[in-house]
Amino acid sequence: MNYLSVENLTKSFGDRLLFSDLTFGIDLGQKVAIVAKNGAGKTTLLRCLMDLEQIDSGRIVYRNDIRIVFMEQAENLDENQTVLEAVFSHDLPEIQAVKKYNIAMKSGTEDEINDCFQEMTDLFAWDIEVKVSQILSVLKLDNTDLKISNLSGGQKKRVALAKVLIAEADFLILDEPTNHLDLDMIEWLEEFLSKSRSTILMVTHDRYFLEVVCDTILELEDQTIYKYKGNFSYYLEKKAERQEQLASTIDKARNTFKKELDWIRKQPKARGTKQKARVDSFEDVKKVASQRIDEDEIDIPVKMERLGSKIVELHKISKAWGDLKILNQFTYNFQRKERLGIVGNNGTGKSTFLNMIQEREAVDAGKVVIGETVVFGYYSQQLIEVDEKKRVIDVIRDIAEFIPLEKGKELNAAQFLEKFLFPRDMHYNYVYKLSGGEKRRLKLMTVLMANPNFLILDEPTNDLDIFVMSVLEDYLRSFQGCLIVVSHDRYFMDKMVDHVFVFEGQAKITDIVGNYTEYRKQIAKYDKAAKNESNPTEVKIKSSVITTPEVKVETKKEGKKLSFKEKAEFEQIEKDLETLELEKEKFTTILSESSSSNEQIMDAGNKLSEIVLKLEEKTERWMELAEFV
Image (cartoon, rainbow, N blue to C red; front, side):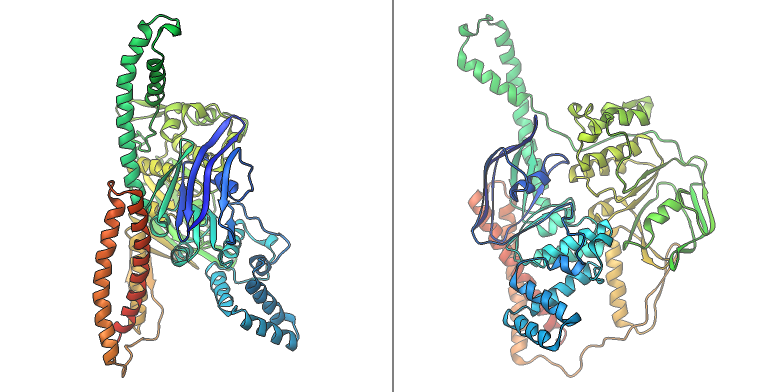
């Protein structure tokens, strides 16, 4: 069942063409992501689909009688409303009933409360009440009486997200839903959207999100759309195949072009004397041969100043903001080529810690010692602060004309811009013409162009597309200095760091050896230990100690045994799970085979979704029964 049909959609701004003749469709139940480089028009496309941006030509058709909800990057909220009023500002009868019930419970009479109670019951709205409470709790919006005008940017983003999620829309359109969420929130949202029955179209740069939630990827490139029926891994594989085929086509066209060019040059200048068909063919070949494939890989053997034996030493440093403790008698020495990730909820002091390392923020007690050879490079969350009337290349040249490479080579500003996906035709653009993501990328380049040997990246993945992130990852793989990364991008953290500081609040810092995935495993292990041990467990790590709180022991329920019927169900579920896994493998293979037709791919995709749902349901039931086997 088709929910959205887009035909020959074209949009430009002045003389800049964003996309041309886009044609695609989205069906009931699909979870689709749009990926593209910054500035390619992802957000503009979503706004066009919502009729918030005028299109040049084409047609956008939605199925009748479906409820569509759009979450924009910029929060479109009424500053005078409270959090609760904002999330309930929908016209759904069930949501309005919950809203009235909440108001009555605060200030209504007994009769008003009874009337609202009955209305909630008649509309079966109690489930929505529970859902709203859960969403607000997870997104840490517990104080629902706060005015929107008093919230931070991140809190407003979470209110906008909560408003969208409780709407129970048939079709959700989300622009960067994971921005300003901490890691726990992102993982919760991932699970929420995976289980949602809503059809979803989203723009996101979170690659694990793309991997787990999405079953279709639309890539906006070269002003057109490429469709991939699968998750992020499938998209990467098939895109590589497409680029290989394109490269082969371009190579053949260039060989033909050289031969045809010789023929064209030898002919008389009067066009009428030439074979018109061959001339037309030459123009077609020229167009193909002139194509350029952007390479998202980077290999820059930068020659940086060597770090000495003393890098950064933290000697019993303490810091607090009022009652909030950031650090207490914290001691740590950074080593050469150290790759540290930092995670933790907002407000636990991550950015303050980074500022203290660089002596941008004074410590309350203790001492920070910085080695003489250390050159910091700091990418913060703030937007780039330069004259907006400057040209892009001049911003880079103001930092340095060249980056020194190994073996006496150099990389000039223009070459560096190209490496970070700024093509030559953008070098002399003014900064004010850049998109938000392009400005972030330019800021990142100003940090790297200074050739630091101690690099600190505070949320580098916000507003940077997956292609720029791939380039940055390639650059950092060959980086020989110290690296600190604060990020909610789990994919980036897994690839870049070898140990993680977990800021847990009130000066408690846990140091876990391994990447982000290892951190999550450790959390799961501690949770399991908490359920099975009655005494506190002390775990020693590099520079801090973890103490798990005392908890009640949860023992296996005694006296409960499986009935004959439940035993039979348990055995049958085990057989069903084996069968479903085989079917899942079969349809996954069909999706990944290049020989599969569009019809086969669509059919396999639909069946795979059903199988995954059945697997989840049966696994959950198996775990319930397994407790008593």
